[in-house]
Amino acid sequence: MVIGLSCDPGGLQALRHALAGFDHARLTSKPQEALAWAEASSWAVLISDAGANAWRESLQPLGDASALPAVILIVDGTPARGSTDSPADADFVIPRSEVHIRLGTLVGRAAAQNCLGRLAGGLARTREIPAGLRSALCVACKQDPPFRSIKALAVALHTGRGALWEQWHRTDALRACGRLEDFIDWLVLLRCIAQKEPGLSWARAAASGGVTAQMLRRFARRLLDRRPSDLSPGNLLAPLETFCERVVHPLRLTF
Image (tube, rainbow, N blue to C red; front, top):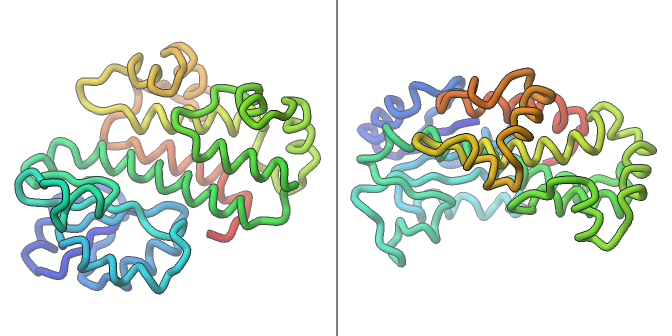
């Protein structure tokens, strides 16, 4: 979910214009309402023109950081590190003058980051998945660049590929989510898509995930029924929604 937050009527109107291209985006002047929407979604990106402290105080009652939205702050000029609106206060900071150019890219990147963070948090809490596999999946969700294969994940955790594969297939909660191989490939695909921006080729985006453009095309065809080149900057959220429908929602995790 994409959420626009501004306590200023003029700022709210500017956000309405900026978010016009995002399906089902919501606008509010109330931080608590924005956070309630965020909690109810598989992923959430909060876009605000307010100073960080205006919404940060409202985050404290939620307690669990994995339930918080990713935050993009829109600021005037180029923020100086250490200022109230510095990168330390948000996941991303974007100058107002660049909103029409870069906001779509940042929203896709922030959404993928938030979704995988929430997924890792939900996996850590569930008891429907064996502890060893649960830990491995959490590590995979957080790894950047992503693991390219089950073997790479197993080597990093000093366990066997077969052990992870067998635990996955023996776990009822995972049967509706496809294969373990698909789960790993989804993580690679989402990371690569999140890196795509105007002027960056799909080959370079694929390289950021440690794969070739040919491998990325194969993942996209199998998991999304489309090619990476079919994805325009305006619909990069569509693959994330497909991932949530086919993998996240069937897990029935508590975020």
